[in-house]
Figure 1 (cartoon, rainbow, N blue to C red):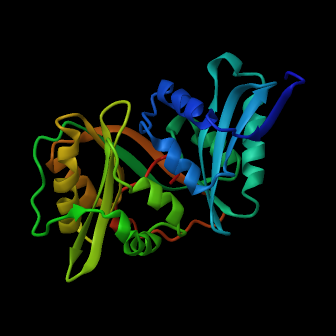
Figure 2: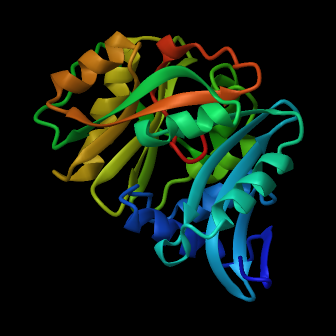
Length: 282
């Protein structure tokens, strides 16, 4: 290992570099994910660098005092096999303190994660393709208004393990290539979702809803934003209604991960998770 190697917090502009590495790995991040990622936890992003040159990365985003989520664990191909990844991993894990840590692991790495104390909780299947139709719902979703995020943040905190208000304020703000929608009944929120432009097509996430009818209304509102491009949704496999919705609009399984936790697993009502927010941040 090079004597100049050190792990440190990311500097401005380095998260964009790491997301480009993620694109090269085929992870297909959103075109403007860095803004909201930084808002989630500015102290949660690290690089391993040799001098001034970043060679690897990890994010361990802390949500409150009891939960953190690990992602963006990448060593640049030119620097693999030299021990840098282990050092970056150790620094990231240490930054979480005694919080439970979640991650979404591909099959090839799950044994390594188990050795590091992570246990599987459920499978997530990415459904993707060009939607052949829009789902039918008895409800109608509406665009999210930036001035009305408070209720949406409360709704989210009943599903996601910890509040993430600053992240959602950035994630759900409408801008080019990004839209969010909310569905209500009797003035009460029954679900919300976001679609964003990625390097390939669009991803929908989160897609949180009380039931399949509410999720269908959100999909009917969001999918037209893709304008015929491919759409991808990461769905917990045990949410059979979500799987049926995806298959009903012509999407097919294209990728699979397993949600794993180090520490007590949070109680997540998966029946309300019709689409995971992002595999990088949970």
